[in-house]
Length: 406
Ligand code: SF4
Image (cartoon, rainbow, N blue to C red; front, side, top):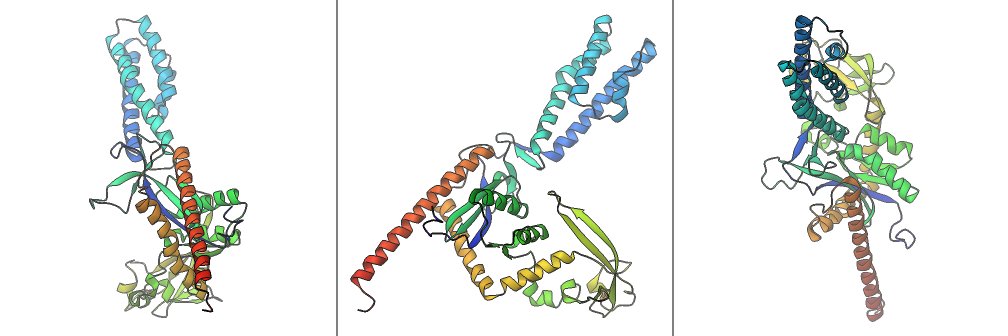
């Protein structure tokens, strides 16, 4: 409706993210590292106990045929399914030898303590889904650092990362994410926007949190203009940066020979190429260069700590994307959009978080909090539309009362 009535044109899309606290207990966190460690320790304990039973059986009865317990001994990574089968096997043996006290004690320990704990750790591991933490009272919430840290102690809170895109201060798209960083939220957010609207806005304007090679490549593939800063965009304007002889950006590049020329006029030659794959399968290719002659260089202390000489690892694609971003952002349109960005998206966040006190979700779980954001966005857009309508009718009546020619 907003598009049809001309309130938004899908020209410039201002994207930013903010963390909203989940409706979850602040102290009931579960950390992946701890769960992994506890599980490994428990598995070792279980295996030690099974090995012990095995040994006793072998020594005392010499009847052991060697099946389940021996198999578990191979990898020491016993699962709940394997453990359950093993207990059943041990319980059958116990029925035959009810006097075997040590076996009885072991079976009781595994059944009442080890098995439930192992089940709990396995359940928790299935909840993480690539995250480092979750809240016990809202499994979809992840512990994140927020800007409104009143006690200034860096305390992590259970949150969702809300991504919002605006145009003319109307909310055009939103998505809720479970990861704290904005970088990896851009392509899923824009995919969702595309499937909702059937197309993407012409230009995407975002801060340095989104300036990754993968995001630039995504926008290039979708033929969108990327007014997206990268992490060193502002820093590289400083005198300190420009005078830093260790920065590759301050060196020159010999395209014909594919060599970098350092501050001491020596050449860094190509050595080898490496390829990394991101979570989504995007491949980042890096070319590695090495200076053949750093010995006796008077700038060495400022340039490198390496004993074997200076090396650099460069992604040519990222260098090219960064240059494109510089050209766009320092252009007339780019400067205008950068100024507009702070007014656009920050004022929407201001209305949502300050004026409407949306600082914490009321509901739990990703599907429900997404609905909550949807309702708030709808309310925001209706209020905004009403305000624009009132302003327009006031302007009209003012024009009638005080015609410009008067
Ligand atoms: S340390 Fe090596 S790479 Fe760095 S300025 Fe000196 S010669 Fe060049």
